[in-house]
Image (cartoon, rainbow, N blue to C red; front, side, top):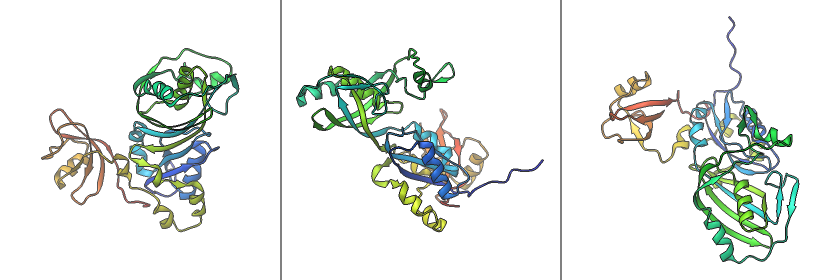
Length: 309
């Protein structure tokens, strides 16, 4: 049997891409993967074509920790137009209803916003990638079919009113995974009695990653013909996604047995939770979890963490 040849470079790390408006997340991923000539790459948490901003691209061994970014908190800058509801909850949908917008006081707006701070329930929108009986909701919505959706609990850690200009609100939203910002905007507009939809959305944070560290796509495209060392310098280490997790350093013996898949005893390790695993030479080994008996169990191991290799 002929073995399939590995196509592409074995490059490892995380690129904090600034996805432009008008591009799908998958198209952005394929563009970056091609620029790096990477054998393996994936993104963490899609952004709609209408949205721009932070899209972490995980390459090589970093794809093993991408699930932890999917579970991470997110932050968005969002502009909301009051008085107009659309089929999709954003500017790409057809207008359903238009209402006049009175001049709301800041106190009136804050009273409504305050009701969405903390843990809330959201009904997922029909224009979403969730599935109903094997079909994506947005496929059903495009056929004019609406199905009942169960409300889901999400958490709005912070919701700040940045600006009010006529019928436009600018908000800063820090939320848990699974939060639909379009639904949040529609619900706020509904509580104000005028309806609303999102006209601009920009993701500014994913877990430990911040907007100030993003790399624009055009900057990466400009490096397409440069040496690989130049573009690899834009990558963050694999373990950067786990910032804030406690590190655990293993002895040579403990590292050996853990790499065989066995839980190990590590003196002075945390007593619970998830940890980052390192050798005594500070080489990142992967993700571990503290068991009930205090031993450190391997959960997701990486082969190595050298950028661009």
